[in-house]
Length: 341
Ligand code: TRP
Image (cartoon, rainbow, N blue to C red; front, side, top):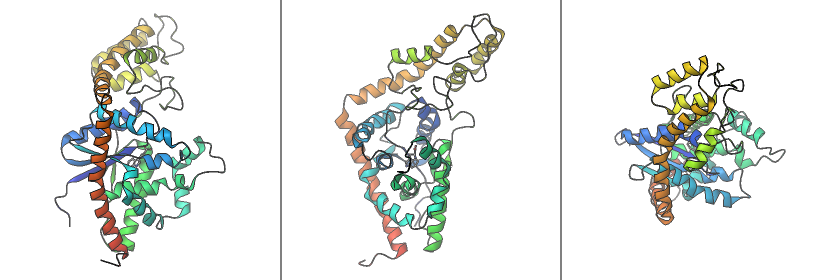
């Protein structure tokens, strides 16, 4: 019984630390735009259960990050009046859905997931990869399908999760011969704009590499980070011709400076020689401060009232439970384990 075919967004993050500008360009920016477009029911999930799949022995980290990530969301403009912000662990239906779906996915299929494979390599689990970790794409399929999401704004490393989700949806609907679940689509940043290198020029910005600019960095921290950024190592004297490609400062300007003509001029000047690194970094600092200042201010405002932030999460989770429980009921009905109805 489809009401109006309103599109539904579901997306989320693992609370394992504060969010950085890589998260912002990779996904948060898109979410805010989609939310404000008004064309979607929007659910934003703090995936604490998924974070626990590789942090089970350090739940305090996850608990602390829960509130930090929520502050980051509110700071960038996710608006609890327009979007439902929910906490994964507070939605019991998700765990039961995960269980039902896990029966439809083979072990070898799980082991083929390229993103999970990469993570397993990076996290040095050795012989002790937690079973829950290998399973998290199934739980992510539960997150997405519980809300019948049509649209999942994420970074491009999440494509394998969407692929897995679509497979589960198709298998479920065909095995139980019902159109209960909805196939989602990913919604990715424009090509070449979804990924921002770290301060050190490493292709990935991440907490573990220590090369991130956090949404919560104060003005001073931000300018120190900008001044330390990797540029062209062969650009030694101001008058030397410099390289723009692979130069982190210019990559950031491409992403954050709205004045593209000015960026083009600066690039030209840098290539020719005569534009010093300090000067270009100061300029980037101004651009970034202007972008991040309103985010910072809003974050600090919300941080004054942490009880209010928990309240936002509680209300969002209550609302989400109604929707997820309805989907779970349809899933149980489809399987036929509704003995007492
Ligand atoms: N796997 C996502 C990440 O690491 C987080 C996540 C959990 C998620 N559940 C989700 C993303 C559902 C989109 C939809 O960033």
